[in-house]
Image 1: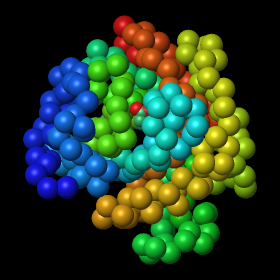
Image 2 (image 1 turned 30 degrees about the vertical axis):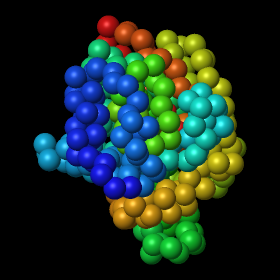
Image 3 (image 1 turned 180 degrees about the vertical axis):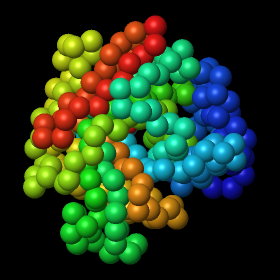
Image 4 (image 1 turned 180 degrees about the horizontal axis):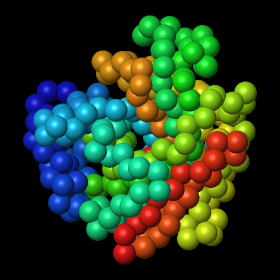
Length: 257
Ligand code: OOG
Ligand code: MG
């Protein structure tokens, strides 16, 4: 699409994130389609790299029906993760640094030797060194968490922070592990890794393919978030959050009061 001010749109989204101030949707107004929206995302993340952050991985979004239904967008999307977004397991986040933070349970992969672009993943255990339970903190920069497909792509798929729990060797089956999200010891979401494209391993095929389409090749050592298994829940001040994935264990964070 001609005439989109990619840097200008990225700056609006970047300032919204930096100041924790919501903005209105902009894709329709500025004429963003999916490819231009990924261009805005690249420019938005480049602003972070320019201030010294490092790219450490990729996240998938809307790989489960629960998530698609929650936000009213039904296409798989991907975004970029930087080192500044990573919170240590059990660590604290300040909810007031975000607009309307939500948390969701995820499965993380530690990437190893990936196939050449366009080639299928032969052996998952070669492509992925380890797996872990994870929590993603999402924070749409759009008012009321309402957006279109190009809007959410431009906004780096609502990425804000993430926690990775202890890494384990890849278990035999990943396709039907129970997933719980707990807040203050109470279960608030229940799901299964089967909700993630039928099998979270499929999210990696999609990630390689979709990121490759926009010139990004996943790297050995990167973290890969396969997408939430359940809907996300608001993160309230003072909350203790745990994501529990059967066989993999727990990732946790606390929100300062
Ligand atoms: C978009 C990001 C979706 C997931 O795991 O499905 C996502 C959003 O819900 O704001 O991260
Ligand atoms: Mg997510």
